[in-house]
Image 1 (tube, rainbow, N blue to C red):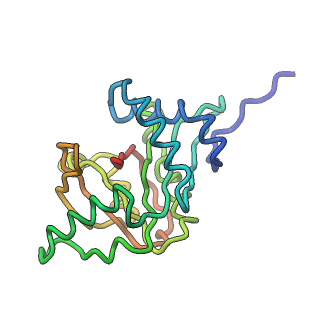
Image 2 (cartoon, helix red, strand yellow):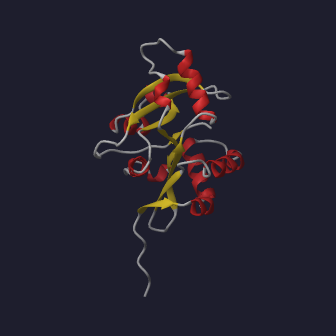
Length: 207
């Protein structure tokens, strides 16, 4: 008798499982973001390094063939980390701007570092499930992320997801060192509000 296909499902990924599926995960990232394949090697070492940071957690979405079609991970943010220092620099430069929050946002937070869904699986709520799974056990009072500004001007699934789940502006039009694209830094207090029906889209936080 042929075994029935597995049901699509959300799974937690330990460090070993994450490493085993890293090529799949980065392939989703590259495909979803439209980045060149040359990105794979650099991202591989970076993502592995991230998995050893305090508070690191990863979740994935497996399809009926046990293939990874969605990936999300993050960790506790703090001084000395590249993203923390870059955002703090941006907030300090905007000090006094009524549209920018204070640096107190950079305390007690979980950084949503990567959240991606393969283009062929987008629009089915996978992104929101990954986001909520990470937020549920984040172990911090806030969640922060960064996402390209172009998604705001022509709102895609990423921006609709973050606004729907209550993320608000922390820092806008921020230029991370080495990247010419403007990014928005978004955040919200945890826990998240109860889920609402919606769709999903990948996001990228540079690091």
